[in-house]
Amino acid sequence: MNHRVFNDRAGDLALAAEIAGNAATIAMDHFGGSKPKAWAKADGSPVSEADMAVNAYLKAVIATARPDDGWLSEESADTASRLGKRRLWVVDPIDGTRDFLRGRTGWAVSVALVEDGAVTTAVLAAPAQKRLYAASAGQGATLNGRALKVSGLATLDGVRLPIDPPNLAASFWPSPWPGTAVAKPNSLALRMAMLAADEADAWMEGRSVAEWDVAAASLILAEAGGLVTDRHGEPLRFNQPQPLVHGLAAATPALHAEVLGRLDHALKALSARRRAAA
Image (cartoon, rainbow, N blue to C red; front, top):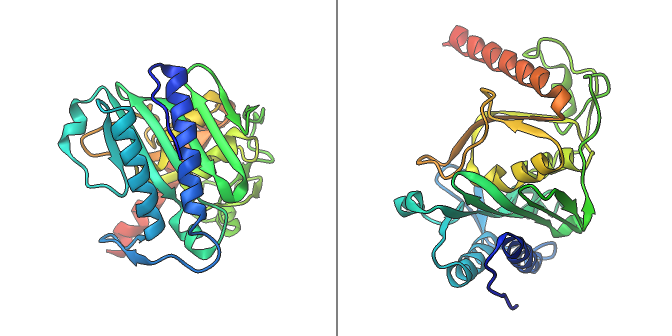
């Protein structure tokens, strides 16, 4: 595996695509046949020798090709030094490790470049699906080289959501969703990418999630014409002292306000239930 040194926005995207593709090859070497060694992290989430091998490769390449840039990864110890960096690579070596370990296809290598708090370069490599998503700020998003555009759905009627089917009519919503549940990959990034590829119309997450879970996918969705905010309706910012995104509302632009409102209703309903049960 070779890598080259690039020095501009197009070069950043070329570098990200090349190393994400190489990382996907490393991951695929562990996928399918005999299961890789895996263990639980302190928070109970799984990690495997494949995650660590991909992480080591990506970190080594970035350290060589972009020695002045910062680094943030799910599988590396965080350091405060990244906060002083204008440019930061935000990586999830295998987003969707549970699907990876189960032999399912809903996982991806996620590579994003953040500059001054905003994602400017993004690649998602999903080799088990034979998919490579890529985006550069202001230049659009692609899937295997084909330009992406979100659906034109303007009302909730017929909305497609990557959620478990029973949750369409869960009692915490103000009313059942008037649409359908579609595939729900374990990878949060791939759920967002489904919106960019016109395979879903909306998705939301009430919990706080790590920056590496959504950095690359947020730019891919935005460059495909989608809208994504945190659960408060605020734009996403990255390279924060606590690298967390406080919930997500992602949708086609016409649906975003309604999706955000329904998420807010659900969070308040669930909070009220917890207080009542306490």
